[in-house]
Structures are given as structure tokens and as C-alpha cells.
Length: 154
Image (cartoon, rainbow, N blue to C red; front, side, top):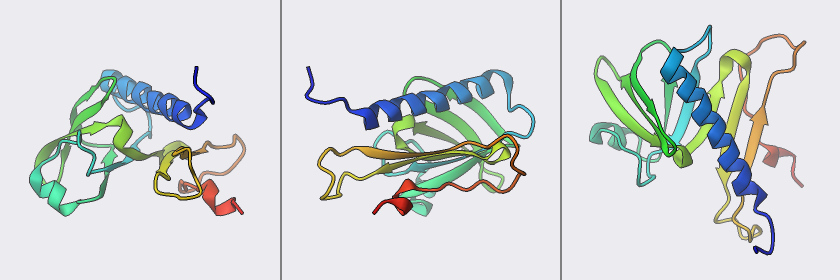
């Protein structure tokens, strides 16, 4: 048995499962109401598939919007594929879930942020930090904001 429980990675797996479940519902039923997503992912991840011209334009990370026009959303246990319109040029992307850095649904002020601290000398466990925001019932609607807990650490 392991010497400790790796809560960071377990939480990442669970939250990426949440993203998978949400996208599976959208693939099956379409986007409900005003929901839409901003998904930022690491374009250097070896399993990311994208057109060469997009990779040269976004060499480190890319944010895509899943809202009005998208086609061929296919979701599996590893990630999702989607065709999006880039300046009247449809392009298909394959995005592994473990390349996702942020997932935001501004229509309900919900956001997830996955931060890796693998090169942090003070962090010997190579755990990742996760930030979660969900709306409070009685708060007025405003633009979504992702807040990193690192801001409050001493």
C-alpha cells in the first residue's frame, strides 16, 4: 500500500470526470439554455491533435469557446474531439482531459483551474492545485472570475 493518499491527483481525476460528464451531455443533447464553455488547454501535450497553423499560432496554450457553432463533439474517457470554426475555416481538435488547464461556464459562474507545480522546489509531492468556483444562490450575476488559492497562501 502507498505511504500516503494522493488527494491532489484523485481530485483531478474526479473533476476531469465532471468535465467529461458535462461534455457527454452536450454531445448527446446540445447546450442547454445560456450555457457555454471556455476551455484552455496545453497545446504542447503530446496527445493534443490540431492543425499545424493553429499549433504555430498557439505554441503553449489555447482557449476555445464552445457556444454557438460547433460540430462533431465526441467524448471518451481520454478526452474530446470537436470541430470549431476559426475565421470561416472549420478545424477539428482533439483535446485530452489531462491537457485541460481551465474549464469555465460563465453563464453560471462556474470554473475549474488545474495548476501544476511540478517544478516548485518547496513541493516534493508534485501535487496539482485545483480551484473551484460555484455561484451562491442569492448573488447577482456578474462575469465569471477564476480565483487561484495561491493568492491567499503565506
